Amino acid sequence: MWLAQVGRERIEETIDPELSIDRALETYVKLGYDADWINQRLQTIRARKELTDQWKSHGVEQGKEFAILTDEVTRAWSGMSTRQYKNLKGLKKENLRDNMSTLEHILFYSYDDVYCIDFECIETDDGMIVEYLGDAKIVPEEYADYLRSLIK
Figure 1 (cartoon, rainbow, N blue to C red):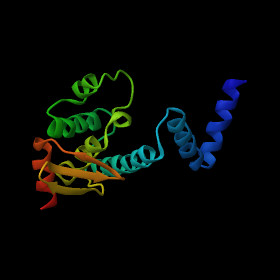
Figure 2 (figure 1 turned 90 degrees about the vertical axis):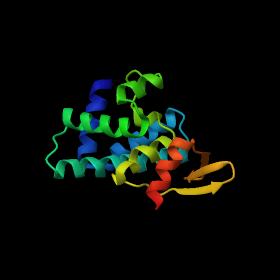
Figure 3 (figure 1 turned 180 degrees about the vertical axis):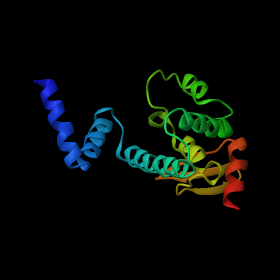
Figure 4 (figure 1 turned 135 degrees about the horizontal axis):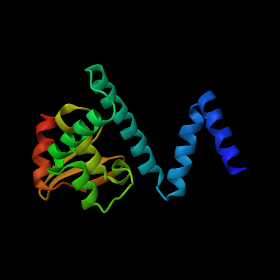
């Protein structure tokens, strides 16, 4: 019965793909994420899609080549491979992007002008503050210099 229901749902999702988006949203809510986080995640899913579309247009093949490029982007802003970064965060099979903070998303998707999500940087006496989707964080100095270079 359960398998038949899942099969029916997937067939319905091929007819109306928006249903799969609704299912993903429901899953994020069940996992305890708030509306702001879910909206941010949807933006980063779109950013990832635009990034991988760009890679495809340059002849990069999905799979191992995407993993290599993702690894390079992660290493460029964090100094670690994607696997090392997942280990640092204590992740096993979970999606790294589902477990990134606002700042991590900004750094990943704005690196080297790959894709720049909309955020605001405010310089204060205490350092740089990044504001995104109503969330404001003081940025460590090593990231602040990088972000300054993006805004020039």
